[in-house]
Length: 185
View 1: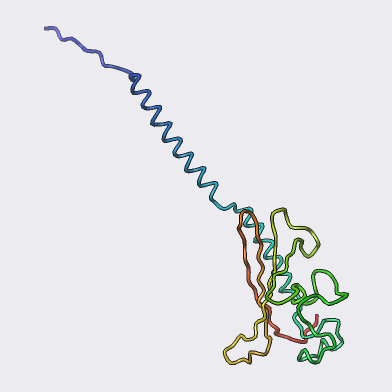
View 2: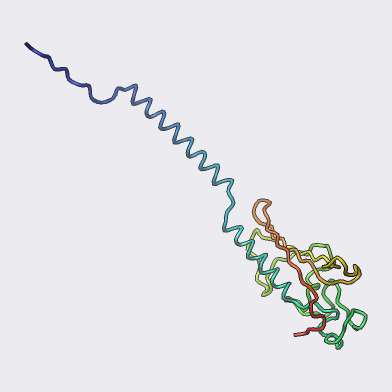
């Protein structure tokens, strides 16, 4: 008895090879397309972190400024219990002959309440990186309690907005209260 041994086929045909190349090519193109779309649409953490650092620096600078009834150079600044007791009462906008940044009072950072004021440098005069713009809005807060009289200015709400990139922005809010009206460091 003779048994013929058939040889097994080895390798792939040309059609199988072409199909494999086409399938792998389409899958690779799809994966690269998704990765490209994802990286284009994702936020750049470095740009956001820089904008956040600028906003935090501006907010800290403003919150560390005094909040008094009088201009700190006023002789009655240490004893005044209201704006009526001052020769130079504090209001929005820097006083004539005032010093540059950092300013001596919180409300010197804006020209008017509820109106944005733009800044392009930090307190040391160093310009912000290209593509970043900061603006500050200060709003008066007349009451922190339900029973306080609304005519009494007890604090300021400070909003710092830093715009960067393609219509992206970081917004930080802070409050500065008049906790010690005659505290002049």
